[in-house]
Image 1 (cartoon, rainbow, N blue to C red):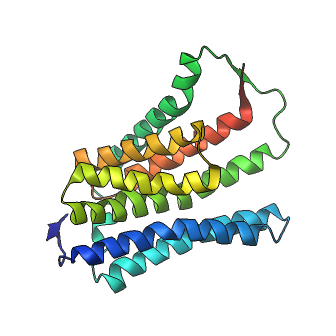
Image 2 (cartoon, rainbow, N blue to C red; image 1 turned 60 degrees about the vertical axis):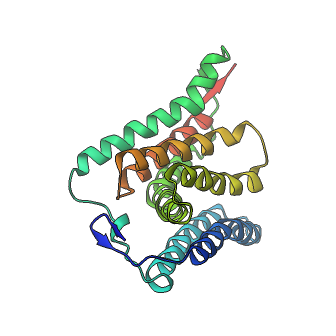
Amino acid sequence: MKKNNVIEMPLKKSVLWRDIVLMSLYPLLSAWVVQKLGGMTTDTTLQNFIMMAANWVWYFVTWLMVTKIERRSMAPYKIKEWALLWQLLLGIGLGLLIFFITFLLPALTQGRVIMVNPYPPRSTRGLMLFTLFNQFLFVGPTEEFVYRGYLLDRCREATGSKWGAVLIMTCLFVLPHIVTSGLGVYLLSPLVLSLLTAVVRVKLKLGSIFALGVAHALANSLLTLCSIYLMMA
């Protein structure tokens, strides 16, 4: 099978589904471990470091799965040097669209007034710096690589359907959010983010997940920023 100019050996469907299940279980296990370790300290810096380390380990585990277990190449997911500015602009535009759909649009349709919060926390600057650092270097790139990259491709191979793969991958992406946060309006953000980034990757036939990582990080950062500096009445 040739994908993005890289020839890969086909895998049995049983192997594909095994790997899909294994990689889908990691975020659930990781969330439990992070919660346990984070609960052992009151140092917020250490807690933030634990969260970032969990994302790095997640990327490393996926790299091991691709290169050592499946014996495939990471080349299809690497940042392509061509049209790097175009990919960056695509990521920014997509991130703003996700933010509009998940935050601004619901507020506008409900007739709610958005105002500046006159009492932001004292630690706001440090929180935002950590959010930007964590989202753009860890959360955005890692989650896009795992879900819209690895899992979307493996689901597509296993089912033979690109849109079926999008739906399965989105369910796998939303599941950990349900486990950690429960059912509710909160799920709108990960649901929209997953569907839009997956559709963009499928329709534009993106090999690199650079643009999707930027979109993911930007949307999450804007939502965090608004939760601190804005309030709705």
